[in-house]
View (cartoon, rainbow, N blue to C red):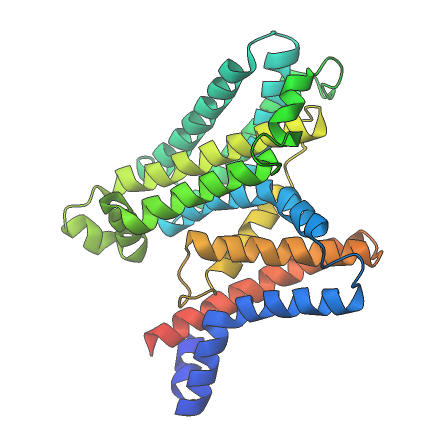
Length: 331
C-alpha cells in the first residue's frame, strides 16, 4: 500500500469525502474555472465561438495522439515513441505526395498502415522479448527519429505540396466545421465505444486492471497489449498526417513535442470522473485544459516559455491527482 493511501486512511470521513470529490471532479471544476476566469479577464477575445472553434481545431491533433496513447496506458503500458513516430509519418506522407506523386488516399493508407506496424513492433518487443515498455518505445522512437532525418536528409519538404493535401487539415468539408475537429470526434468517439461498450473493451480494461487475473480468466493478455500499441501507433500516424497537412510541409521533428502534451492529457484524464483510472473521456478533458490554458496565455501575450512551464506543471499535478485518486480507491 502506498504512503498516500496510508495517509488517506488517517483522514476524517469529511476530509476523505472532500478529497474524493476533488480527485474525481477537480479537473472539470478547474476547466470550468479557467474558462470563466479568462472570459471575465478578456470578454472581447476569449469567450467567442470563433476562439472556441480555434482552440478545438488547434487541440484536435493532440487529442488524437493522446487518445491512442490512452489505449496503450489502459492496458498497463507506456508508449514513448508516439511523438517521434508522428514526425516520421508527417515527413513520409509529404514525401509520398510531393516526390513520389502518390494519390493522397493511397499515401494516407500507407502511412497509417506503417503506424500500425510500428505499434506491432513495440508490442512484440514488450510482450515477447519482455523489454520494459518505457525502454522499448523510447528506443524505437529514437530509431524513428533517425529514419526521419535519413529520409529527408535533414531538410524539410516544403515545395510542391498540393492544395488537396493541405485541405485534409485546413478544409471544412462538413457544415463549416474544421476537418481536424471532425476527425478528432470520430477517433475519440470510436475509441470510447471500443473500450466502454464492447466485449473487447472489457478485456482491454481487465488487462489494465490486473493482467494476471485476466490471463487466468482466459484473456490473451499479450494480444490485448499489442492491440493497445497498434492503436497508439495508428493514432500517431494520423496525427503526423494532419500536422503535415496543417503546416504544409514535412519536418523530421515537427511532432516531437506532442509526446509531453499527450502524457499530460492522459494523466489529467485519469483524475477525471474515476479514481485514478485512464479513460478516453478523461483524456479529452485533460487535453481541453491544456488547450484552453495555452490559448489564454496567448491572448494575454504571455512569453513562449510560460507554455512549457504550464505544461510541465500540469503533468506533475496530473500525476499527483491520479495517485490521490488511486489511493482513495484503495481505502
